[in-house]
Image (cartoon, rainbow, N blue to C red; front, side, top):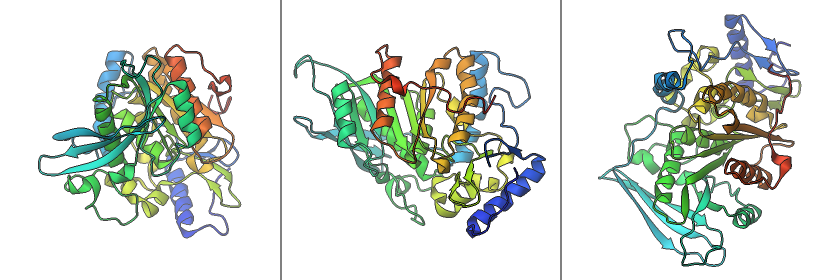
Length: 401
């Protein structure tokens, strides 16, 4: 079924469908996949070199990754901020009886730095307070969302996970038309990186800090984020190999979604569609790399799709969590790019290291998602999962065969 602008659509959505129609004509293809879903052409093959030869080994993959890494990170995100010349972490508050330890992290150039806060709730030690005991860490930058509710913190405490939280908006504001004078923009004014990159840089600095905290098990650091925070987590995990487990949740376009796959669950009403790139540039352009703008309405010209970013995580652990009813975050497009990225995991002999987990419902990040992540990590550490309901499976049997 070919999508056309519908009555009552916003001007922005009418532009979106005009772009889609033109793109479809250029590609010569509009393929209905799921109700009103549309696939615009074939996804670029991450396992094919630019000269057309196939990737056939782990050594080939290393070279292939080097071939596209800078292109993708530069186009999609405007690159990453530089590694800091100055870094330090200070513990400023010690928590007692289920209270957070608080750390102040300072990083930047020799001339100028930014300081932000990370809170960590460690479980009770089983060996006694004076004994060294390390705990796996789940780190989230969504302190601004307040997703780590008391239930989530209690679950982590009970199961032996340290929960670390920072507010990514301390690194860069999350506001339209904010000038680039706040946060790390003021430290690196000549770099074109976007807010997602700035927030991902914040994750990296928190990992730096965890390496200086004796109770943190740095062999088992996980990061988790929701929506725009999920977009951030995908980039942070793709660009830092110290992070072992990456969990983007309901991250959509510019995250785990797919530029070439459009989800439309209720086209007539106009209230259920996956977020288009033109919408992001119209509302939140500061999330995006400036070079990406030329692909608005021309997404099929992109030399990559988001499975390229996911594949940078391999062979480390990737758990995508999504919701069937969260059409805006493109759950079916996300699963398509997941399957494409999983080909890299299969090539490397670690297909089981990438999993997807879907639930009913809409756009949220709550206790069930955090439980799914803890179960995922437990199973990868050889610990039986507590909740067998959260073991992953194919969310759309036969859809992309």
